[in-house]
Length: 151
Image (cartoon, rainbow, N blue to C red; front, side, top):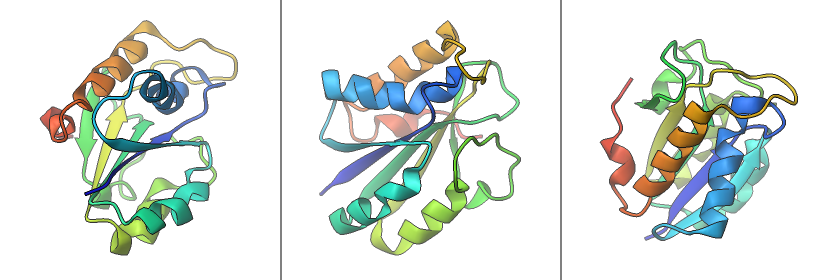
């Protein structure tokens, strides 16, 4: 049973780098049996590789403006992504990516991390770094990510 983690974001844009930081942390200290993809700001480039794996679960992690305090983490129903006003710095809205993969993936879980500052060359805030660390720790158990509150 394969589980895939798709980390999304732009590390040059402050808190939007949450996803790439998570991918880096997973490379340095793997937790669980996740196959990790750093999708950067063009996660659609990973669709073919993910589709070939036919994972039981696809976990997508991205900085997401949800109107919460910086660093708060929420599970978001993938079907709600298109209807929500969410900050995106990506080439393609994530709901298109999810739609492309839906037939090849058992379950899609989307985790949003509330950013504080998103702008070129800004450093990542401590609140978002701490959130990424919490997500990283949750990966040690397959269902650990399901412990985050739903939006």
